[in-house]
Length: 313
Length: 143
Image 1 (cartoon, rainbow over the protein chains, first blue to last red):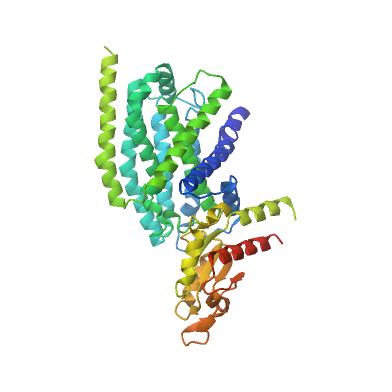
Image 2: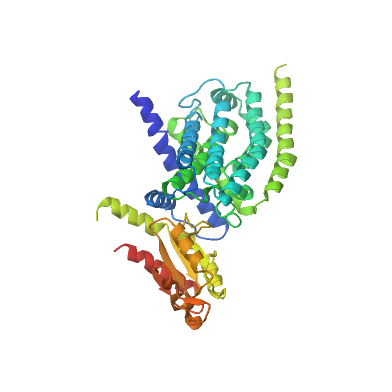
């Protein structure tokens, strides 16, 4: 009982993932700055931002539905942390696992977007409403390539549990190469999920103020920012667990280092892509996802189906 | 000062988010404010971020004399910001009304409408002066 509580709240639960996500945000912002030939923020920047926001006054608009307005950030945060507990990190087995958890993790990672939508919608600001509708429109575009990418890897491993996937790819490291399209499709879809720059139409600050977060201030905004940071770490861990399960037979310290390196690698790729590209309009984003990402996902599915047919002979 | 206050003050000094509002300036000060935010000066190394929403920002950076038309908007934006909040007046016009003082359509400096924490004179104020003013404002938080 106490051990389970400790794992949920401290390690590798809330506190560990919170600190890790702050460092991931720092790495993201620092790399972004260095790629733009700037110096960038110091390492404690996300901590300072978080503490400052928590201590600020929180304003609830008179028009808003105050219950939903306050619950939405907590709901988003709870769902990403729950998703994180089901992802195998530096071990083949996650803290909790069962058959079919890959689907549960994917859906738990969808919930923050729903919470952002609901919170933005019920804050009754026009900008927030436009942002929320864009967030939910975008969801339908990137969610399917993400599912295709990750589930086709699961298809080759012939299992619906993340435990089975990591064990399979750890035993057959060369199959990593067959999933390379899926990896990039999932990575780009993950950027849509995190509302990073090419896909940041929902919170485009130059056109619709701050999107869904327009009316949020103080600790609710802090919780939403923490949610997005943890979602970045959880998404990176999920991609690392499914697509890059290397060296899981090594001693614990080496596995832990490899895990951190993989997360840093994926965060670095996200920072690189968001530096290179400018924001897509929402219709361009939808068109891009359905025209290029979904066919690529289909190709990945086809490759894995053929490969599986050959293997099962 | 106990440890909790110390951490809070540290966080506030290290993470000032600004929002820029033109209260009727000729655009010269606005260009200088934008120049201060470019990679050449890189204010993100001090934690400064430009925010679009007044709800997220800590510091309201105003430029220009307050025209009678913008007066109620300035008040509303100030009211929308969450406590603790500060106001910086950038440029001579924002400090006192400048050459426009006494015009029929001008109310005066920023401080004739809302309380101002820091004044940065100059026509236009240079980016270095703006950064210096912001740093002095943040240093005054320590006391």
